[in-house]
Image (cartoon, rainbow, N blue to C red):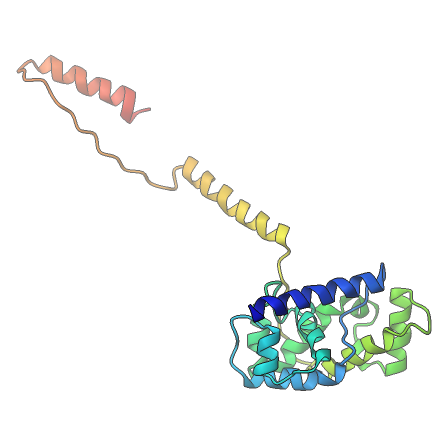
Length: 231
């Protein structure tokens, strides 16, 4: 019951955020960006949960403040957990000492792709340079109150990344892409069946008449061959 309630709270928070921001599409951010280092430090220490819920974050990672609730949607936008709150390969690989920096760098580049299209070395920009670049990309006013939180979130994440290392980013499949994949697999199986790559065996039992006339047997087997075996 608690897990279900927490998931509903995540969804409500995301819906509220969308309503407040309207048509403006901001890159991933949280107002409580100071908790980001602790979040990922605790992720590396704790076992991988079946689902990353508010309850797990509060009881295991000890991130109990109401401001920490936004960290779950942030993990989703970064590709560390999927839409069902299940940890992804990026989440698991980040816990590896040798991979953590490269994994974070890959997920940052993916989550802030528009920023990296504008400047492939965005992580080297200073705070005021990032704010200026983001305002230009998003089209917000100079006094937009969200831009500083976006920049601060980005910079906190960048501190955990190794941009000189390489790792393949973990990107979630959209629901329609997943459906297309399943449909393609089904169609492939059908084609294999139609073209004979799937073998089918069957047994035919014949009750032969009690006769010594060879012509009768020849007629039976000829008919069997023409209508069943060659069909």
